[in-house]
Image (cartoon, rainbow over all chains, first blue to last red):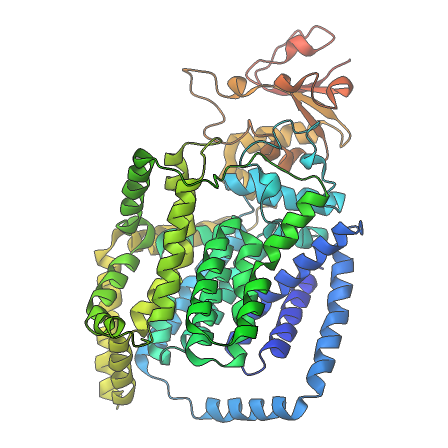
Length: 459
Length: 160
């Protein structure tokens, strides 16, 4: 039953992506389908819980099926356009020129992801943060069919539940997605992280193809995939890699929308940037950075405001839900700016260690730094002349998000854990969001595009 | 065109090989994280979900599973404070598992209700305890009867 339930999530997501961005490639839509479907289903579950409708997964399945029919009915009126797109795809497929380098990286990626998928699906959830949080909340929510009324959210049963950094206030997408599959009879929730990562690899290849040719896109996906710590966590039930999936795809589509202004990128950019925030609070840094660059670089006022409001919507919804239902924990964020140079020193030291760690991130930061240094030759003069350089949206959003995140870490009061632990574990995992973006830049900058253009012409 | 493809392929393969051999964490990714686990999976593919969980979580899971199997779904179980799982200066049987976190235990024990000793009087289920989880010999004082053979780990009903 849970396999059918997951298939419904994929179909719902594909239908949403088809209505929202019909002109995306099949690969993009296929990859974006599951994350988009799961996002909508968990939003639906929150809505159901808000009005005291039990979180029964079958109800979600039936409502999703109705939505799938409705969305495809909407597509029916555009059937000629759809037929044209499929015809174009068929022609494109027949004319597809395969080269050995592309094939090598596709085969290697498929092989490694097969091993990773097997590992993910074989072992049930065992990692500490998931068992002491997301997975257990999802499991119990599926049994009690509520989130706001959960027995483990009551302070007379869990006396420390309102303490600083409590699981009670975590953004609920991952927990609800686990509740969905558990409610359909799954023995473990591992299909969610496994399918999220597989979907990501497909979607990321699709979106990277918008920046560069197929060979560089295959290499971008391959090098992202083999990032040691990210790959290790992709088969766990923890939220960080799922967050990275939404946040990085959100930034990639936002960049595309800023660079090319095409409508087909607008809704995916909103959906996935908002999706990141629906998974983790810290994703606010990507939302804010994206909004800043959208208002700086885009003159479409209506769309800009729509983007700003809709990407913040998950945060508004969850905050309202918590307020209405008395879900609260002791605050950890200091709004008033701090001045603590010791703390700043510790943060700088740990970030330096993380950035230079090949054990965690392989060659990611080295390759990106090299790419950036080489590109400064054309980037700096362009910035000096205030010419809009093609790299500005991607680099700008990436660096501003990172800066905002460092500020966030600095402003947090570490009442529930030592700052050193947070920097060693949480921050290390948050940086997963940047890995796809750094590889995207590494392989899609001007010089790499020229090189791969030449390569694809030559072979 | 074929020879150009072969040359490009050799170049790409050299890059992959250099990364694989030159960066120890990439060796770990392939040899240990992926291939190592895959071999393990092939070897143990017939295991149940509980057995797979036990493979990863070891004794802490085995003990919670024992408590789960020995108590009804409606049980309210008294469990010890953190210091009992992790006695100071001694090696704990629970390793670095998060057993002192009630949510961690509930993943195995739900729908049973749990009351940790420091929560007595605060926890809504304090007055309806039906079982005591014996951990590291702790718990016998909370029983309403004498136990002749005192095991290090077990779970017992509060009333005989």
